[in-house]
Length: 24
Image (cartoon, rainbow, N blue to C red; front, top):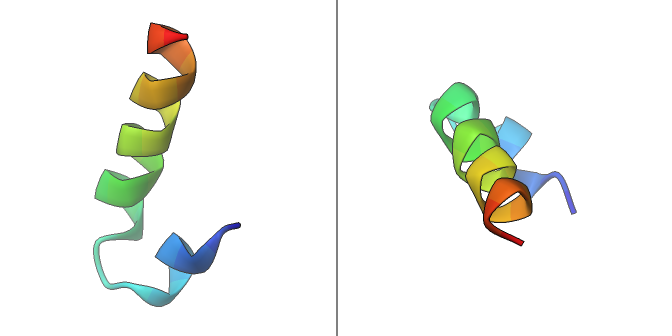
C-alpha cells in the first residue's frame, strides 16, 4: 500500500518503509 505518496512528506514515509524492510 503506497498511500504515503498522498502525504506531503512522501519521502519520509518511503524512508520509514525502507527501514522497516531493512529491519526484517
